[in-house]
Length: 152
Ligand SMILES: [Zn+2]
Ligand SMILES: [Zn+2]
Image 1 (cartoon, rainbow, N blue to C red):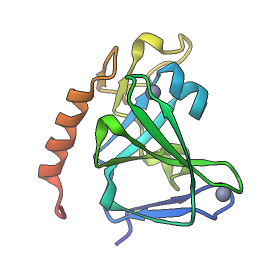
Image 2 (image 1 turned 135 degrees about the horizontal axis):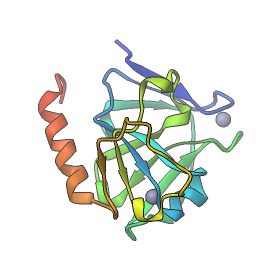
Image 3 (image 1 turned 180 degrees about the vertical axis):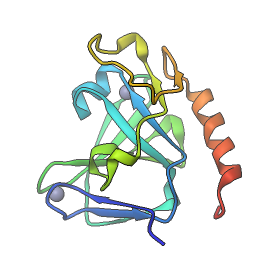
């Protein structure tokens, strides 16, 4: 059963998953800000847990931790729908704004708070904040959430 679905603005790229995200992360780094606008908030899944339809274009850039991030975007409407980060191999981040019902997925962790815009406040949803990339801590969350998955 589909638990989460979404699309780019024009609908050429769609995606769905039978699972809930492992966690929802907000990245405050300046590279993501330039790329995704204000903050990059994304729902994190194992890459095989999400089914994508459509033919996205790919743009690769250097993320806040220096590792490469491969942003996938619609060649028609230019919406960035998802990305893969070399630092988090095997995972995919679904850009929160492209998820239907995205109100259901407030970020519960954030990274690069040392670059956070000073007018951006956390409304209580974020339980873990890291000044830098916190790759190890995020992998720990992945491993922890894998134990709760029915399907692996
Ligand atoms: Zn589109
Ligand atoms: Zn970032």
